[in-house]
Length: 589
Image 1 (cartoon, rainbow, N blue to C red):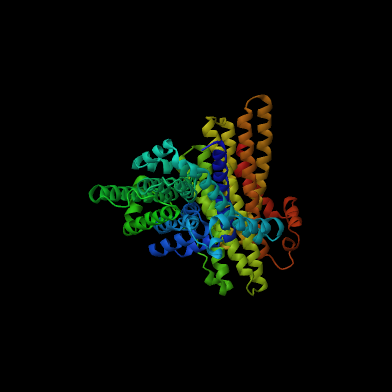
Image 2: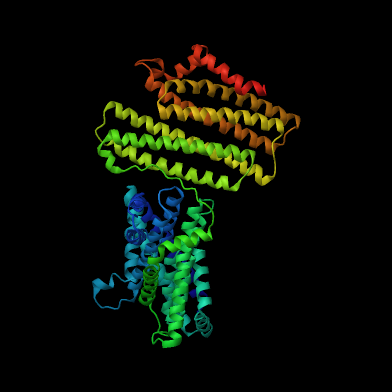
């Protein structure tokens, strides 16, 4: 093997990995979230979960992507931990499809048609079709199809390049000795795990092993432990995706790892124990691409069959590995069957929007507590709830857009519009709350703290914003005009406080009483708190518009209505403003 072969090998690996990435990304894109919705709904029992996991992974060609979806669903409260077990088991089976396709390279035939489906011929054809669709077709969907074809083509071309480059290694004594060392099961598992963890794709690492089979040195006893290691190494993606997520999301990633670890240990005991007793005749048989693909499939199918009856025990195991009470956020169910009755669908959507507001309020309280005293568990709970808010927004957006395709009355159309605006306000509040928590993290990690006067000011402002948020949620959930009228004067007090506290802090910075680092964090907090109260004002205005007489100023010109309030045009507003000013602003004035 000369330098040219090494360059060809590296180029083949690059093409193979790039093709795998392009193919997977294209397949995920073209699914357009539909596969996620299928996973959410059709995992009511373990057997359905296994079947779905296998089918979804066979379509998108990435067990890691399927498992990461499960981690996200569990984290958002969309899926129970026990539901994720079957999907993960099925994902390991579905990921074997790529290896099966690559094994077509072993076809030996003089038939012209059959010869075209061999990777050596199929790769360039698919790459050509793919590049034409990708480069010369403007349609987004056709470009994505072109990306998939191009990915498949590069995958096959890369495989052929790798096979051709390493074929000469069969006569190199050092390489022969290296592969003999992989017959040590622990070393084989370690190599398979390491390579797959680096490239984060078991399909890709199995493909590389299939390319090496062209040397004639890959025997059953060397391939088996490497394949087991490859299944363990692919768990790294799910584990990385669970960092900072809820406990049950971490447990979902641990199920993936535990399943493959236990399966590998079981296989090692059966294979090496059985060979010691029975001396399997196939132990030293040389494997080609098809043999490796079949062994990969056999391993995953047998592991699933063996561990499927013990799926409940697997859940209990990961609950011990990741201990503690997991606070899951159960979110409202938006059943598409309700769409046939728009009034019922709107009622369910409104319940979900109110739930978003409750989640945002809960997170606000946690963020304020974090500013006062940092607590990693509270931060974890906050992040878990934020995932639930984001998931609810996606679900509601999709659901309400579907609802607009139905025959709606003018009143129902207005309700859809209001719900879309309100859920956007609650989602933005959730984002600003996350910004508050990030400031709390920055203060904690840098070991810095505000002065007593700055703390007192912040406590007053967070109290005012907290009451604004409570009133906005209360007026929306009860449709109360009385409560809605209380939000805007309170929001005006928040604006007054934010402006005053900003000016005070700038003076402290000028006089050297406060550092630039602390000053930046303080001003960021003021901005985010004021924006939260702005969105609370938006929510209250929806209720005021709805409960006002037809043709009222608030319905025809919102800006004029607010200008009138803020410039002495309403005695009730002025009285409430004076009341809230006395409560929150005067103590720090």
